[in-house]
Length: 400
Image (tube, rainbow, N blue to C red):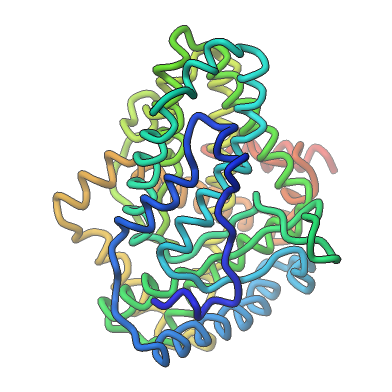
């Protein structure tokens, strides 16, 4: 996919940003761009047509998301933008996002343990970690269909300073086209189906403007806490960055039904071990469990909205869902092994757990009753409530 077809491209992290971290994000971006698979070949005309089709689908999806969610925030999404990108641009956007997201946490560790932090970030270590992070992102770049990125502020009104809030929806055109051809489904229907899920994420953050800061603060507290308590900081900083980049929420394909039966967020789940092995006290484990519950809520809600569309809007929706699920169930053994290794099964579990929660609550309270979840961080489900939604319903009813 020709990246010039996108309206704008995320800038790579600056040298100053890269030097403040135990990972060279510039190296990660360049490594990912260099080794990611090329994807389907398009002429410039085909690339522009594909990008335009996705922009139309993204715009059309908003009205449907508004109708199905009942969230008035869908009427005004000016705090975020839609970008149609290729694979290298997606990896560059994610290195920028990780640099922005992890910066405050690493600054905290640097201030609290300066000598160990200096050893951990000296010499070749940041470059090596950057190469490894870039390789992981390169693999993921061929799997992601779309991604809402809430942690990168958009330029302010004057075009120079970043605004206080903002996000961007990335639609990875070559991957959407590749999967569509593989499934042999209607192009316009498939684009709209994918965009329904992704635009729901965009509306979630617009409906809950506190959510971005809430997640960022909790992630910073988790990362700071688990690195603060490390007895071997230099060795484990690199392991921590790898775990954060790859999981447990690293998979990508909207609406996929994954395999595996282990519970998400438990130590028996191999996909969760990347972060859990670094979490050393009950407080940090509770933070990780709560983050998992919130991400499951967001993914499950998007899937419920995606699947609420009927054939009057997406005529071939049943065919698309059938073939998409069949595709997930018939992956090669190598593909399954790589997905387990990189924590992708955990993401699939998020879709299912969150979807069950949302369906139960909507059945009990209606969509309007469910929507109180966006009013305050206090209304978010805890991890136990996510798995026992009747407890959340009882708590919310008690507030009334």
